[in-house]
Image (cartoon, rainbow, N blue to C red; front, top):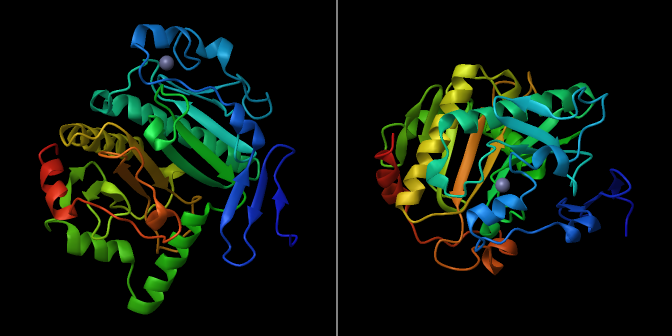
Length: 319
Ligand SMILES: [Zn+2]
């Protein structure tokens, strides 16, 4: 193969496809990840859960003292530690609640906000060590790809943005060149108050996208111009968490139990005014065992059954 692979560490290999530029991150050790079963009753599951309050100190690894003096980063009740099966040299696991609760209608804004603040603290520490880009993701339940079911975010830090973020930055720039305006200003102008408008929380507007990339997808867009989670004021972190919590409660009513979320954020000062901090969240596998098939994986298009105008109307009731 061409020499386009970059070995990030002895365990992770990041390869770039020479034709398409698509990135693959390979870590063979991930095959050995422990897997929690959804059918296990909660009291029993808690005993063996490495992320539960009573086990987290003994069952999870710590950062080296030069990265974090106390070993684990904490914000409120959230705890960040290194992923034992990483996909980047700095890959944090963010357990945002000590409680082993799996139902998405039970996550309040405070615990989600703790998780976002802890994620930002991890990203800030990574940035100070030469990994300025970060990507906050959430896989909830096994349909979404989670191996440990105890709710947790993950943050991947890197020297360059993940592919979707890189594409987003490029698209924001070309929109500005083509239209002479910021895409996000135009989006908010046209969508707030539209049939796809879901609601507002402090600092954020929540919108169902015209062409969703997954089941009942919603985008939360920061109204201010800051591109970075690392600069977000506490009030706005609470607004972001509040919006996520409301969407999750709305999803529950729609029968959604599993979600995937990504927060698109740049290092402070990046984006030249063309980019806005935003979160995307979608439901997973509502009716089938798997919602990523040939059209999604090889066609790079999405087959959906719900119209954004319809689910936006349902979710609006939670704002
Ligand atoms: Zn647990």
